[in-house]
Amino acid sequence: MKPPGPVKMWFITWVWNHTPTCKEVTRLASQRLDGPLPLMTRLRIRLHTTICVWCQRYLEQVKLVHDTAPGYADKVGQASEKSLSADAKARMKRAMRDNDAQ
Amino acid sequence: MQSPSADSPPARLADPEAWVDEYGDYLFRYALVRLRNESLAEDLVQETFLAALKSDAAFAGRSAPKSWLVGILKNKIVDHYRKASRETPFTDLEFLADEQGERFIPDGLFKDGWIHELGPLEWSAAPGAGLDSEAFWKTFHECSGKLPRKVARVFLLREVDDVSTEEICALLDIKPNHLWVMLHRARMALRACLEANWFARQEGKP
Image 1: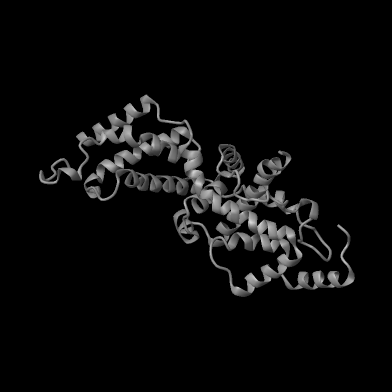
Image 2: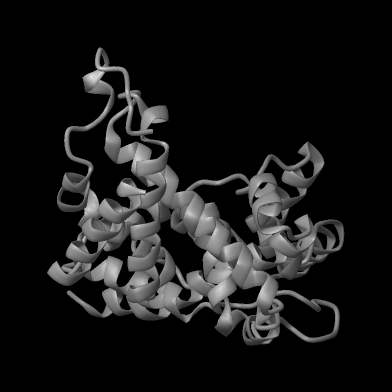
């Protein structure tokens, strides 16, 4: 990648000075998954991504993980081979019987 | 409780012990993936059945027994989280903070910008491809297993079970700020782990 020319550099610096830092963007990237951000904040993030491909990727990727995560319970939890042992099941039934008899 | 009016037999399952055979394994796996501890998962499943038995009359055939039982189990799990978080403070946070903090420029004009070489890589052109595979979920499981336990719990509640942040704060009795920090770090760490162990590895393949 060749270094940016003076005009582009000026633009990058200007945007950098008027938008949140990358570290801040990562924090906001998380926060926006839990509730809507104020319009101005969203615009600043948007502007920041015009000069920062890393934040652009970061925003997309945490969103992707966020959208994928709900499958985890079924894909990992229920797909596992784990099950209650016969012993455990017998114990549970016994406990239920004892409990019911009281 | 054992003297139900004879005119409402469908309200009560003929044999609650049959729940154990029918739903036991499902509930066990449900608890296991959230607790990562077999004997604890087993205990909570048993408690769930006992609690179900007690409120059997309240159930009265309202919904499918499975979702009713899952609802009871969910509460037991959250109760456990709450008790556990009271016993030990959330101290394992720093560990995550610094590991990822190193990816940012420490000073100068572009302080707190990504160090380019350490910034997020481009993931495969078609995100979503292969995310259904067993191998992906195995990686996801391993990555989430690396999170400090308490951070993993709030991550699961928020991202997997879709519990709102307000509710998590109330359930676990933590401050919103604290929760945001935990979620932020969990997401950051998980993203980095998936990148290193899944997306970067995929690229090497034809």
